[in-house]
Length: 339
Image 1 (cartoon, helix red, strand yellow):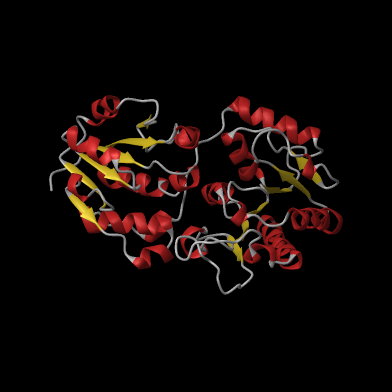
Image 2 (tube, rainbow, N blue to C red):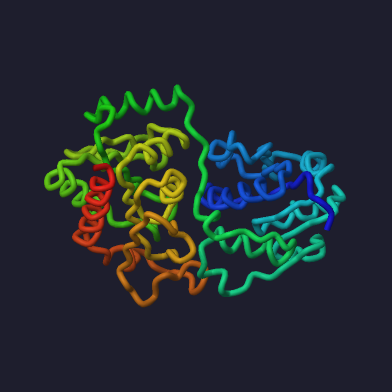
């Protein structure tokens, strides 16, 4: 196979999925010293724009943008690698005459020069490992697992950092003061721990450990659910990079399976992660992460059996005591490391 100097990578998926691809891109850059163009949805741009191993971030919205814009962008690349299951971009890569077109077959084998199948075991290994296996099977590129455990996230600007520092100080957290970070609400209710349990956890962390919790994320305006003693409520007040900066500065992140977990992995922030619907073998960080599950027999069900749950037991049956104890152990370990 000839040297690949320019590679077009497609990852049109959720922000967390894009972040889980970053170690693959970093290792591609290290091994091949190639130009990398990354195509993502608009919501993921701020998470990867400026990372040193990505030369260009390209956004394609098929509802707004013409196919011709993608074809023009793809032309001149030696390979197009599809780490998603989108159909149209593979066809556009064929029309753009990209010589090597790599990805999971999934109803688009006709447009790929190097197609492989998704095997069952890939559902139960860490997502970056699965992406690396795709490259090894199709292009013979071999990546060490240790290189795949470090995720990456774009840094906040200085102005964004200053704004976060100001909000924290207004909430009683000055520079150097320890805090726990949490984004209690996810985009999928199946991943959510009951709100009353989050509130009980925050109270115990404050009253028994003397540590404040910074709540961030959620959709739309600030969620008043978290206006309570022991909590600095920044929900609805930060952008994506500011949320990541909150995680970076935290002594601990406690969260259910969603984007902040991967932010923590990018910054080596210790993490207590609550899992039910999704499989921690595939989605939980490999390092510095304590996984909590209730042990319900039907969990995890993500992608396997589906779910008809209206109030998923797998999350509801995780106890506050168990999560609190895991948080205390992580905080104590962090204190010892800083001595």
